[in-house]
Length: 113
Length: 112
Image (cartoon, rainbow over all chains, first blue to last red; front, side):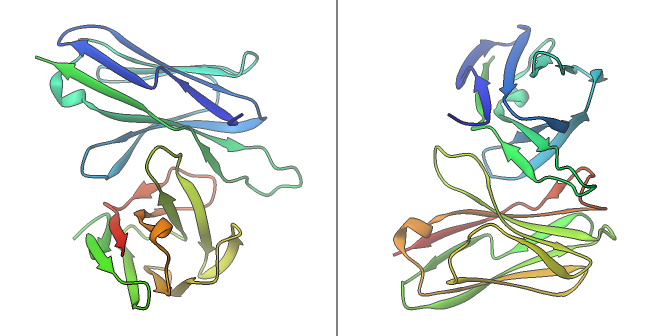
């Protein structure tokens, strides 16, 4: 079982729809990241969060540390939002050192006009 | 030029070839990373350099050899690769190990 699970694996939406992508993890973490990967391969970091909620434009990310769960929401989706969305967690490492990022397999989103 | 750049963007090589991937960052970051992304699999960390020193080798076969001559440049030297090494190789950098990572566009490698 992967330490970071995302759902759904694939998602098709109509333009304008509200979209939710989920991420569950099984390890103790110091931070969680949401990343966006476009078909060409380049990856862009969207959010880094360790508690609560962050918003940037039409994107909202939330995290529940107790439940080890995070969601990425896209409001008023647009075809240009079509990409793979990747959840990654930074594991806790005791003794002051930083853990590495552990990645989910990604959610492929396709928004149709 | 800003951000993280990688060259070449595409590479086809035979199993007996030797080639190198180059990564360059103009962000003043201290940490640099090599990742491998294979189809249907999560990103896998290969190597981490912090202040030009290798701090992580994630059980990577010796046919992959990293080099970090200075804090702005990172290389991945490839020799006698196998077809299963075909993947997208991504470089990233961050101010320090705990901060947001900035990714390059990747090198798509095909080993014949």
